[in-house]
Image (cartoon, rainbow, N blue to C red; front, side, top):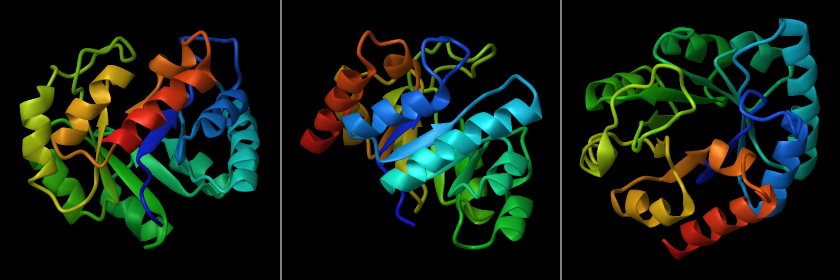
Length: 207
């Protein structure tokens, strides 16, 4: 499956105005081509319920859904993919369990991690934090554009830039060689999430 360029990450931690499915719906209306379901807290039953609603919506729209961290949830709802952090389920094992067709994204903060993820079967790398972010309790040190460029040119799989991505930064990360961007709070906390996604999508097209 082709890797999208505009990944919108759903959020129910920094805001409670919208459910995951509602955010996904607005993101798709704005032009997102990939939705990532992300929820770090709550019961597994609640996660499954919310993820299933989001999966049903994405399936109807023909947009791939990737579940962050939780391989059990991804399997249960038959998601299109899984995104794994450095401390999550081992990527190589996930690839063996899920097969060749499922999208597997891997977080990387160094070129070495990105190359290791590629060797273990990752479909793409989510690299960052490119810019400062407040969406993680203990974020890694900001990497910046130069290191992003090194990673983009150091692996053969798509690199999705993440952390601190806003509309006015899209051109810069794309010029560095990124395949696309992943965005959460710049959309979920926006006054108008649909317009925020639309602006991001337009800037990506221009890039």
